[in-house]
Picture (tube, rainbow, N blue to C red):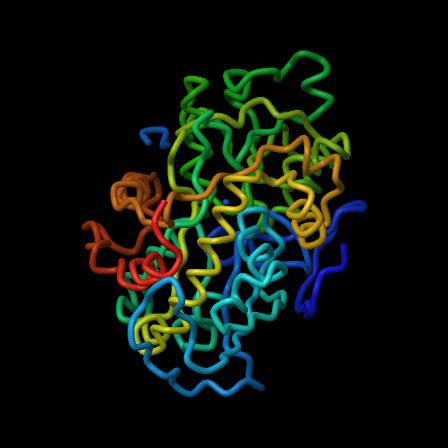
Length: 388
């Protein structure tokens, strides 16, 4: 299947073996991304696509719609560019782009790769319009420092009902084969490699440890700076286990670096959200509605037909660089019904980071995350595509 009109611009790269491995976007704590690449329940008790307005595209205000409904589309064509890391959770973006779901609403979306570490600041300045992200300490600190810069506008991926999510714990293969680490409980006292201590995977990692009767204090977490570095450390045997996400999880297994000992926790938990520049989401409302309408339709196709559908699988494989066999074997995310945000899940993430050792948040009292959620754009998008 030929993928249409993709623009891949690699701004930073990190590879391991034959697979092009990308860091998660900003909130997941990885400082690099590749093109195209892949990736993001509490111990008491998560990437990513960022929409940017291209410098070569006119960015004047879109003509206001007279009313949202089944026949609605932008009054005049508009174009945005989207930064992605090739993460599996970004599949709705890939599907919407390649199947013409954005174009249905008069919105042209081109795709680029970008530097993950710059996403938050760029979005605050309005150079990046939106990003699919997990809730990390970094995300919450950005919101605390500049609450008028951002809005959460929709939900993205959720852990499926069977509890098998995008995040997993890997035991180094030699230690698994020797019987030293075959369960989560065996990780006690072991060196667990992570990209960042309090990134968008931290909450799910804590939940997976809890399922095995452990907490963060029972393992030695080793911060390695990026997910490719985590896999390299497994290969070099400087760590004994790792917490990573799909499709890096399956890539590590395929390369003989590790064996998954746990990937199941917190069924139904919303893992990632669509986070937007506040001015774009409110002042360019029609663009935001068109973008979300396309995303919702793509989410529904993936939820209904599945990632292995003959039309969808080649698209996902093309952007993530997965083989058909890898995609078939790995756990796939589900997507939130009608893309509506579960405020309780957002609160769970914040409570987790507030209680975390080392105080990764720059504030002590909970933020009013409800003030950071704008439900108007997704409500309008659902008027266009209908509710399920």
